[in-house]
Length: 202
Image (tube, rainbow, N blue to C red; front, side, top):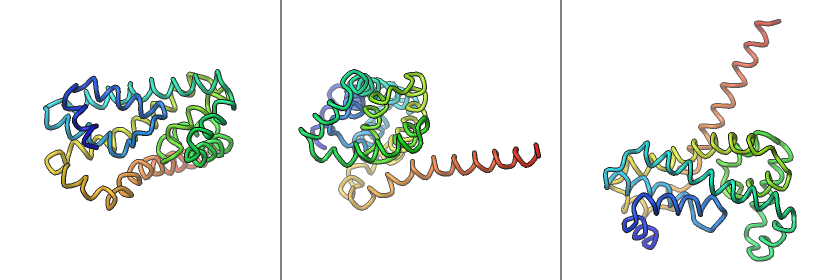
């Protein structure tokens, strides 16, 4: 974490963009640490919250499109190669595949909020040949919810960030559950509105 911290302090907004893009491009960087850290450093250096958020979303989309393109171009052989190089990725890849098969068009949005599945879903969508526009729109929604939640935590608690990170394992579950809860509530509201509208029409 100290390396990431130094990198962001030295290179500013460019480093934030690069780190987030790399994380979404399936490199092993924990977004649960990177995004709040970016928020904390942004607050302490007087960067605007909206600036850092928009930058993070663009970086996330570009990293995701990279993985989508690799999956679309390389097919299942790419997935097999990733599992061969990094066996730990197998669980996340298979979970992403299950979600995609089950929920199709909305799977990309949902998976953006699920640890392990978050980045690998881009490969799966590319392999399946999902429409690129659908992929990008779904990704924007999911990435926006995820990034807003985590960057907000760092931005709000920037003064206490070092102390908070020393208890990372204690609060990690809370960080993960916030964005998942947001999208779940959204789906419940959408379902309720749809049912109400359907009853009115009947």
